[in-house]
Image (cartoon, rainbow, N blue to C red; front, side):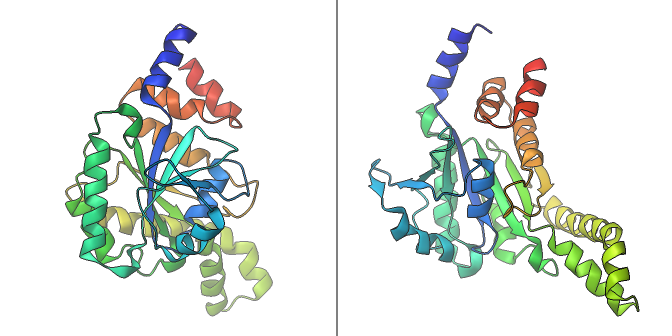
Length: 261
């Protein structure tokens, strides 16, 4: 496609807009920082486009109390606009209703730049015994996401290694032996949790369109490539695929791969 035509398409759609859903301990802020290759806090704008002091909202972000309409933008990569939902800990029907309304309105917004293009639903594997809460399952049953791909992001997957070490020690191994053998068992445990989550959500009316697991997002070298690939592949339109790939200023491999495609 001619570069001028591509630019017109991007200007028509706007920036790539993502709704991030998850509990307040799911590592959402850290995940977004890795995606945007920064350690800085995002700039926050209200629905009127007015900038809010990020230090004022940071506490509310950590506790999960904030306005879903607020836009989070990282200056390191302003091609993304994020909306962060309130955590599900509250278990409030009102909160679920607000989220359903937001998805409904933003999925069908008349102005393309106001639409959400993807949803990242984060579940921390530090709570693998009960990975999907009842309130979260209600989202997949009652929130119409037919026109917006939902990617279920299993965060803190490195917790599986600690769990594996504990199980091996309980089985009679020394700490040194357990650490050396934990990798294989951690992979098996992760596969088991993923299967449980997929089986639980498979019967829902609007199940996720993709599943990814991410580990060590607190490290600057952490790899977000699986999430970006999964999101890109889940998108229906070629223009949206090009848009999300174009935001990856530091992911040259992904840019080249999809440019060739």
